[in-house]
Length: 420
Image 1 (cartoon, helix red, strand yellow):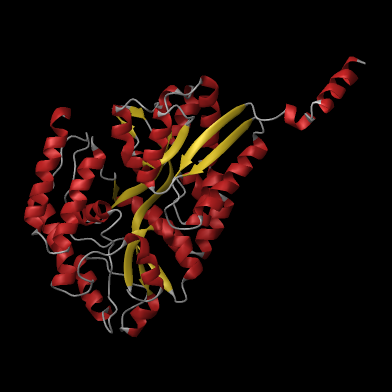
Image 2 (spheres, rainbow, N blue to C red):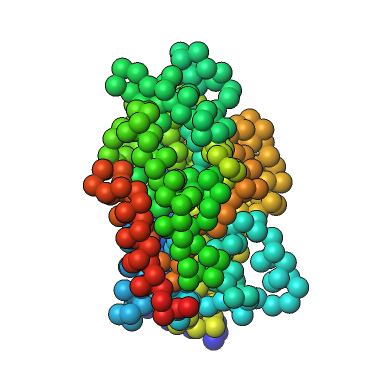
């Protein structure tokens, strides 16, 4: 009788039995969407799968623009008292987030050998931007390296082997000249959006890192770095294989698809979008070398915000572990072109079958062997902006590479002086 009374009361109040079992823990996750591919639908699908397995946790995914927009929106929400438990933000944001005491180390959230095994399951190269001063502050998810996309049909038309992309800077210039004709270019490297990222790739290929591993020193005015920017500038000014001025990050993929360039350097996150849209035979290759091979890693990590309850932390950790599990990471890689973040992802039947039928999906992963941590320092945004401005000033002819980088170095030294 008592049970019937309770059911009647619930019905009278318009409360269903399913509502009584509704989510007890609610999470707000900020997520960047200004990247290649239809990511919103993909992330929505993963969140939906998580809800199905965890009906006691509700995830509100807020799609918040590019990485910089996401950082601003997430931190603004926190500062204004709005709920925010986790976000996918730049892997290079870690220093600044630690300094502002906004995030939690994952080492404090996991337990025992099982937790340590989870942290150890990710590719070490992807963890390089996450592990600082002996603790793990970010978990890789939307991760990439820069890869070279090339139009095999244009290679054939130019008398080049369509199965052999440039492997050295010298080959890049020589092939680029053969591929440049009729107002179309042999190569485009984007110099807006993330110019520092492309420049770091060129610099490491020329044998020089742009920053120290402790985030307090930059090497912008090093002769090898200056030589790197002179080479980038020469691709248009001297060799004519790239357009003069800047090349837009946001429209480069479309320029490649329309045949305006035979080769482009871009994030592996564009791979699935290019695969779906290309009307020509295309290839994907590791970046060419000068003194060595190399690309910086890139993309986003999961971060857990400090001002969260123990219950929210447990729920957020469960979500992160779900989204980075081998099965989900495999499906994510197939749907987007971003890397599976662990070796186990590439051992799943789904990703094994996909890479066997579409080998370009392995290029970014294989390049991890020669990858370095993405450029990151304390005061990352300000230091990075100075470098971006220097790159663009040189490419547009407003300053010499030497003068532009000398200015950026002086600015970086001012920004980083207090952290040494």
